[in-house]
Length: 212
Image (cartoon, rainbow, N blue to C red; front, side, top):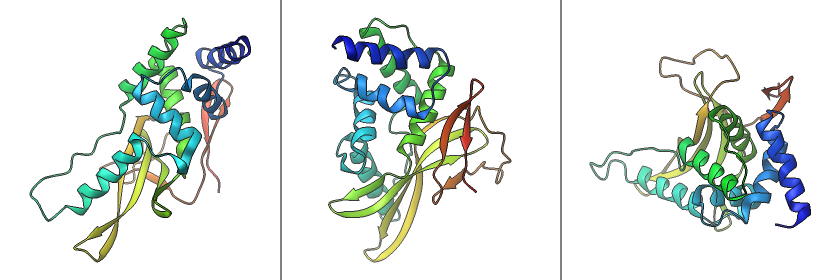
């Protein structure tokens, strides 16, 4: 890392530790550490998805394709579907902190990482999921009373001809930001399919800008 890169990294890192960052800072921070994270799977894959978006072809896309196969197999086998985040909050925190440690920087706390993952989820919303040149799904921002969620909605073929959509979480973190009413007793998330959410910093706290 040359001196200019180090200066930029120090700038964005100081924003992370001082709680002055928002989603516009997370994107360049990931770009700066991306080439330093080749052995840290979670950060390498997430940084690639941020940078490449619909051109991305890595592990996360493989996960989305695998989930489509599992949903299409429903009713054909007795196997149930276990839905898990592609990377857990713990994995992402461990990956970021390992990268920082290698650059001789202090680790981030759970609170700082929760803000970080919330911004990351916002950055990844609206990315189309492509199969060759055909879009068969998309990533959306979602929120429940307890969680901020990157949600995938994918097209599923059942019985060879019938098509339906499956919706499931890809990344999750705690909702420490918006006090909202539960939709139902299951706390089903509010899905923002047609609106683009923005995460900004106001008086030291992250806030969500939700278009009318």
